[in-house]
Structure formats: C-alpha cells, structure tokens
Amino acid sequence: MTNLNDYFSEETVEMMLSSIEVIVGDFECMDDVVLPENMDTIIHAGARTDHFGDDDEFEKVNVQGTVDVIRLAQQHHARLIYVSTISVGTYFDIDTEDVTFSEADVYKGQLLTSPYTRSKFYSELKSIRSCK
Image (cartoon, rainbow, N blue to C red):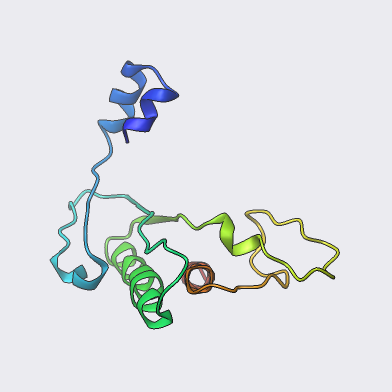
C-alpha cells in the first residue's frame, strides 16, 4: 500500500485507503478469517508466487485458496476482483504465430510449464466459472 505514495498525492492516498480494509489471512486457515459485515468487494491478490515447488502445494494454496475466496464473496454477496499474473500468458511454443495475450484471453495454447503458472491458470478458470 505504501507504493501508492509514488503515484498519488498524500491526500488522494488517504482518501483511497479510508474505504479499504486490508485483511491478511492464511489460505490454509480460511475459517479463521473475519470479514466485516458491510463488505461489498473482495480484491483477491493472495497467492504462493515462487515458480518452483510441489504441484499439490500450489493447488492447495492458489487454486483451493481462490475457491475459498469465491465462496466467501458469494456468502457475503460481495463483488470479487481476482488478481492473476501475466505469467499465465507469456510462454508459447516456438511455432505459435499469435502470441498476443491480453486480459480478455484465457487459453491460447500457451505452455503452462511451472506449478505457479498452472495453479494461476486453474484459479482463473475457477474465477471465470464462478461468474456464470
């Protein structure tokens, strides 16, 4: 949150932060997370972000964590803003002609080579499906 000061005036930052409550939690202990009653939006930016490790750990933290945040948003009738990563759309086979990737794209044949990118890809799918 302190990075906001690099882009906005102190007055603007104070105004923006006056209506935001940052809730820090552990995806493995979601039942311990206490949410305010008047919450109308959840910005889900939490994830395990290292690119190497055990697929099951990334699944548990990133994918199941996203499913749990989706459930919380639905229970509280809150809007959910899901923050993903450009890593999901940056690695294509050398023979791929169209490697343009935007926020409107989900899958264009990109290679999901690390547990991190795979887990964020599947988290995106969970988020999209929750809107239907």
